[in-house]
Length: 139
Image (cartoon, rainbow, N blue to C red; front, side, top):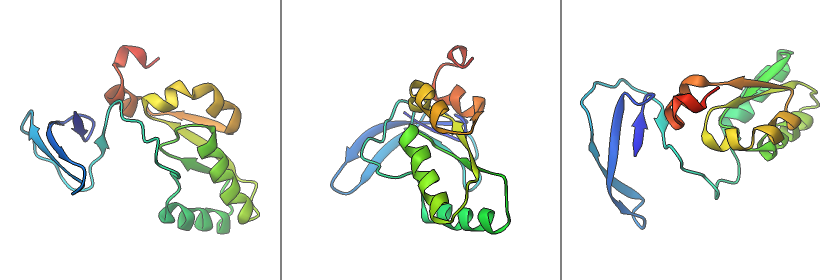
């Protein structure tokens, strides 16, 4: 199942063509979506994803360091290694800026204790978590 914009639209995957990097889906409901909406893949673990830090993140870090911000938020944190990666990037910029890790999926909930030790602050995204896992488990 693929959920768009906090579950406003639900898609059921009907076929996958791994070679072509394509999949086909059937919409389970009918809603209008705008542009740049979130995509949720409940239960999917991106084990092969080596880095969550993007080129956009690198530019953002340069900006926040240049402007002497106190904190930088790190989204889609999966584990303590993700926080370390951001800390290493900040060190390259000679910054001791604090990191706030955003907890927004099952994987980050399962690794919460290790993330808590590695980061300077935690932001719990209840909306994202409520889409990823049953809302009664978000507490």
